[in-house]
Length: 253
Length: 377
Image (cartoon, rainbow over all chains, first blue to last red; front, side):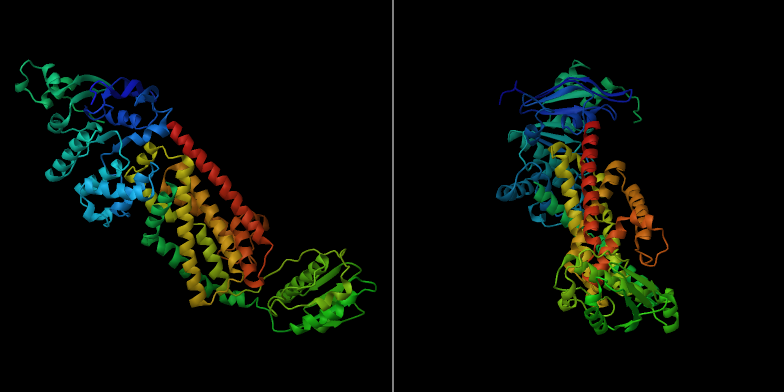
């Protein structure tokens, strides 16, 4: 793994809704093979940033370079290298587990025997093989989150973006998902991970960026961020660093 | 890709119990209610078993040579033609209690109808119209049916043998009230009406898709707007068609509904489902609200159905013809009713073309709106 190879780079990425600037000239670089954590209070612009990276929202200004190419200009070619796991399970309750994976994996042009293999593989990966013929609407919250992941990995993306995948689920499911993120990374996938659970971010992320008011205000490893606040990093948690940097004022968004 | 999209959307729609209720049971129930409500009214328009027609043929009329054959054919159908060489037609009708009188002139005919015998007049109009059409086409196979009096398909070549060169005959195609009873009428018409309520079929799926923001997966996959649109259009058309087919089968088996030309009727209904789905998806894509879509669509469809004969029969409706002409459902209803009782209809092609035009324009608009939304996101 080449630690210096950049898989994704945003240049002056900006999103405005009217006069409101949600993301402001954002420039970040994600290295190939790393797990990159993106933190920020509500309304900081994390989701908009990820939506722009995923081509769901068009930037007002700036660009996203993915695998060395302009994403918007090479969308058809590049989108198959990207997997997005949204916070709320984006699955159809009236479809069986395998049908959900089939539907969303087929969007990337995978078909026939290969598609069937990918469905089996994805369901196996998230531990839902035995539930493949059950309707998604009968699943628990944790199972839906796992199916949500299965739907996003069937096309073997190089970059996986997780948007708060562990909100509101039991510790077992949470632990399972975190293990799978690490496993995906070991298998070669680069990961962008957002969460409000600081201990999770600290545990799995190689580098962390803290975002507020549409800008990156701090970036580095967990230890590097802690050093921004205190000299003795053993005396401070990432959450304290976060609150120190972004402030304790409530964000009403 | 598109195959898997269509397949899975179709599965979701067919698994929905509300769709079964909407497209299988609702047309059957509404048809049954309207049938019972309008039975007496429509029975009053039933054709009599037999009736008498007076006629006169001018000397040298292009019709004269075929008159005996025409008389014989109509006689077999229960229409007795009696010649009156002199006298005022209206006076004769009053004196002899005739329902209809026909004056065959040099190259045209004049039809007198008794206001109290509307159906008899229209039957004769239709028969004569068919006869003249036949003569003008120079064909010698069939004259079609004398609807309400007899069965179709009888060869009457002999009838026209003597006047095959009568191609200059002037005839205005007569307005024809088909002899159809309320069971057949509403059994057919309600299928056509519910075809225009197709958006309900996708409502649950689209609502869930919006609620769980599933559209993001499509957006980031780079799937084209055309494929996205087709993956919604085709499953809706297919599942509504399946539901309505089952409803039609229930009507045929349990209520003895006669569809006449089933193949053409199916094509007319299928095209209207295409038109309706495309049109209603335009509203959905423009408003992004299923509630607004259902309210707007159903209001429009209700008015189209009201003027098109979905509730009150289009034959006896007092609605202005111009409003009927603006309703695509009117063309569809006329085509289906005439196909049922005559086996053919001038409105079949019109209905298919109108539905096709709505469907194509709607499809273009849908793709345009989806592209615009994508650019503005």
